[in-house]
Length: 308
Image (cartoon, rainbow, N blue to C red):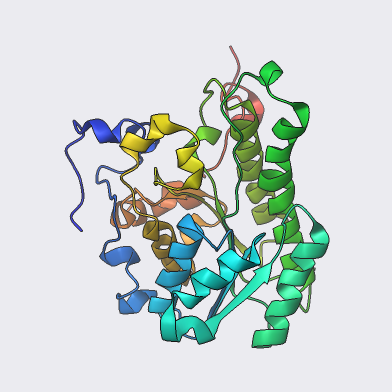
C-alpha cells in the first residue's frame, strides 16, 4: 500500500484535520502488516472488546494472521461472536468467544476469568474497541437515558475493561501488559449533535492518560481508527462517502503497539493514518515533550502557558 501525499482528494475531508504526518495511509502497509516478521505476535494473547463485528472482528483476523497464541473476542451477542469465530476456519481453535456487556463489571471480570481458564493467563494485550454512539441530536432533544448510555459504554465500559484487567493480574499494584483504547477524532472537536459521544470519548482519552500515569508498569495507548465503514459510521450517513480507511488497520497498528519499539508512544495518541517512520523520527517530542497528550487550556500555567 503506497502512502497518500496528495491532499486534494475530497475523501480526506475528515482525515486531514487529524493528520500528524506528511504521509497518509488508508490501508494496511508494511509497518503494520501481519506478514511483517517484526510484527509477529507468536506466544501473545489479545482480548478484543466489541470483537464480533467491524474493526474488532478485523483486528482478530489480523492477529491470527500474525501468529497470535490466542484471540479472545467479546461482545453482547454470543451468536455473532460464534459466527465470527467460525469464519476464521482452522484458526478458530485459537479463538475464545465471551459474551459480555462491558458496562457491567461482573461481565468484564468474567472476560478475564474465562481467558485464564482457557489459556492459563491474562491476555498480553487488551484492545478496548467496544463503543456506542447515539443518533446525532441536540442535547435537549435526546432522551436522558439514551444520552447517558453513551457514557455507560464508552467511559464506564472502558474503566471496567481496564480495572478488571488490572485486578485479574498476579500483582494488581504493578500490572503489566498493554491496553489500547480505540477512540475517535470527534473527541477533539465540537460537532453539533455529538455532545454525548464527543465528550465521552474525550473522557476516555484522558482516562487512558491517568492509567499511564498511575500504572507505569503497564503500557497504555489511545488510537484513532480513521473513518471506516462500520455499523457505527452508518448511524451518521454524512461520514459514509469519506469512509475509505480499512477496518484491518486498527489491528495492524495494534501489532506495532504491542512491540517494545513503540514504547515512545506510551500514554499518547496515535492513528492508523499516520506514518510510523515519521513518528519514530520525532520520538523526543512525543516521549519527552508529550506533544500527543491532551492539553486543557494551553494558555494556563498548568498546561505550560503564561497567561496574558
